Each structure stands twice: as structure tokens, then as C-alpha cells.
Length: 547
Image 1 (cartoon, rainbow, N blue to C red):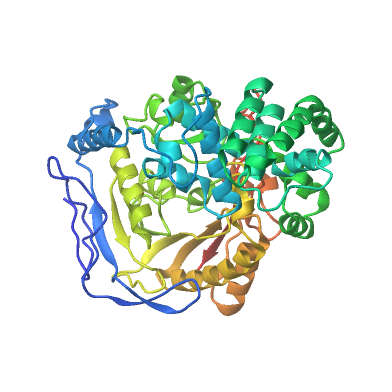
Image 2: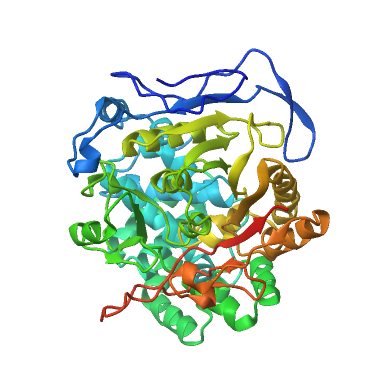
């Protein structure tokens, strides 16, 4: 069973889960100890709390049978119960908005406008809003299909934001009116449907005009909206085609500070390739517990040379074969590379720092390591626990700020997937360019340096540290390693070799670090005539050895 304590030596042997036991993140302790926030100031924070996520010794896994144990039954029961509780209920709109129109598809488009407003004006992540759908009236009233449609509209409007604004501006001589309520978001959502989602123009225009009329701040612009969107429908496709022919699409959709940073860090051509890769939605990559070739066949996916399986499938991942059986988990192929840089880790003690939501934790466990997963976020740790339960995996889980946490014993290896700007994941998160600023990168760089210094203190002599971020910014990658090597003279960089990356030498920087970019294409397996669909997250990783 899981054990929770406020201190003392962590048990080394893995306990066996009792029947029906449910592992949860530890409850806050009564006593607090000072902790640092992002600005470096101290705050009152509960001390490190640890629990062990454990699975029963199910012999059926070795025999190839898919017999779920009691823990997975408990996970399925909670999943079923949550589904009943999360069923959307009809709620009245809040604020001064009028009652929802009777137009078919109106509610989904209203939700899309709400998502755009929260991202563009309030800088709230879209996934955060979708995860809180039960508490947001515009989302709670939607079916799963309508919620997916709303997300598709909002994501497309964000991914193509620069292009859409250029088209809209060409049809508005005086620009967008000030204090016009949700007019900007309504026009963006409607234009995205007309120019990229191939929605019927008459439905898009009718609903958009009704949306404008419903809001007191925008209702006087209903005729303007109608006229502009008619021109977008008629002349917009030619403008979009011209943008693409002139190779302007990527640049138009990239904020200036990011574009300039990539041109400086790489070169203008590479920046162009990165920006163009962001125009396309990311593929679905899976990490497989065992027998990836078999699961590639079952799922109709492509087996990548690094061991991941890439799917073209759409829809909810919970409906894919193997999900309930814990046969795989979602993880971009580039995100799976840092763990592979640790080599053979069977039987070794490894600390996974900033571990949630647990993709790399699962990798470490699947490779035979004894894992301690540490994260400061209780909510994210809850997701990690749920993921490990589904996969029937075991780890020691500790809720703590690693800048304050002190382990009982030192580790053979440490994996630090540090908090970062995540600019390497824009294909998956098209809202990210509107949430991050240049100053965020500078603040995160200091946090990363502090975490690197702390991570080194957790290692045995001769231990290995792998540091990684899903950022394209050099300040969060090679610059941090260069500064660390100056501070710690006994630490050496262990260069990465192409053989560790399925022969992809182009993924290795001149300094021996891993550097993947969003437009990279993994090679097909030897003897295969099928080309792999291009694209992966932008990742940086460095391997360091202590003296």
C-alpha cells in the first residue's frame, strides 16, 4: 500500500498494493517550511510529502495476458464515476449575454469565441479552460463533438492568427474598432472557419452576425461584421494562397520576438522552417510498454526508429485499443529521447525531477529503474498517479520544491525536465505564443540554473545528470549548460552519439547536445518503403557526469 510520511528514510523495497487500494497524492502537512517562489522570495509551503505508487505483482503481464489487477479495476471505477459526474448539464449563460440562439452550431461557435477571448485577452491556456469545462457554462452545455469543434475553431484561429488578421485588415480601412466587445474574436473565429475549416459560408456568416448582435458592446457593428465576412468569404482564399506562395504564412503567424530570437539563434531559413512546421497540428505519438511493433500493427501506426509509434488517428485517445489495458501512453517521440540518453538503467535508483504528468517517469520504470518522482504541483502529481495506476507502474512520489527538498540517499542518475517556455511545443499548443513573453524566458533561465545546481547535489560521485527542456530558446538550453560548467569545474559534458538516436547525427549539436526542431523528420526503418510523417517537438538535452 502507499505510505505517506513527512520525513524519515524512504523505503527501498517496493510494497505490494492491497486489494482495492487507491493511491493519491499526499495530503498537506500541518507544519510548513520556507520555500522559494519564481521571484526567489520565501513563502510558507508544506514540507516534502512522499507516497509510494505501487502495483501488485501481476504474473499475467509476463505471460502476455491482459488481466487487470484490483488497482486498475479501481482506476476504471473512478473513470466511470467521473464520467457520470462530468456529464455536461444545461446552464444559463452568465453576465449580460442574451439567451443562446437557436441556430444549429451556435453554442460551439460561442464557446470558440470564449476560448479566444481568454487566450488573447486574459492569457489563460486553452487546455486549462477545456479541463475545467464543467465549471464554464459555454463549455458545460456542449456535447463532446461540439466541444471538439469549438476547440478546432479556436486552435485554427490561433495557429493562423497572423494570416487571418492580415486578411481582415485588408477589408477594414479604419482597422478594428475599439471597445467593440467580442468583435475581434468573432471575426477571427468566423474567418478561420471560412478559410481553413471549409465550413458552409451561409452558416458561418449568419451565426457570426447573430453573435455580434447578442453582445451590447458589439451589436452596433453587425453590418460591419456582415460586410467584412462576405469579402473574406469571396476574396479571402486568394489572399491566403498569395501568402503561402510568397512564403509569408509562417512569418505572419509568429510573434516578432520569437521570430527574431530564432533568426539570431539559428538562421533565417531555419526560423522559416520552424514557423512553417507550426502551421500543422502535431501527430499523435505513443510510447509502448512492450512490443512496439505489435502495437504499431494493432493501431495502424508507424513504428519510428527510436521506438515510438506514430498515429494519424483522430478522436479521443481513450477509445484506442490498449488504453484501458495500460499498453501505452501518449508522448511525443522527441520527449522520449532524454530518458534513452541514460543508457541501461535497470536496477538503478533514479530521481525524476519536475516529473508530472509522468511520461518520462513511466519510461524510467519500464526500463527497470527504481524511480523517485518529485514535483511541486499537487494537481499535476494527481495526474501522474492516475497515469501510473492505468499503466500498473510503481514509483515513489514526492510533492516538494526541489530547491528545498533533501533526499535520504543520493542517486545513480537524475533526470531534470525543467520548467521552460515550451516554445518547442507550439504545434501542440497554438495558444502558447500569446501566453509567453520575452521576459518569461529570462525569468525561467534563472530558475533552471538554480534547479541544475540542486540536481547535481542529489548525485552519487560519477553519477549522470540529464537536463532537458522543450524549448527552442538557447537561454533555456545550451546557455544554461555553458554557465553550469563554469560554476562546477568537476562536472563534465558527456557528448551524445548518433548511435543513441537511431543514427540521426543531425539531431546532435556541435557541442554534443541533443537538439531537435519541429520540422525534423525521423528516418524510416531499414527496408521500409514508407516515409515517416515529419515533425516532432523541439527539445534540448545535455548529459553531464559528476567528478
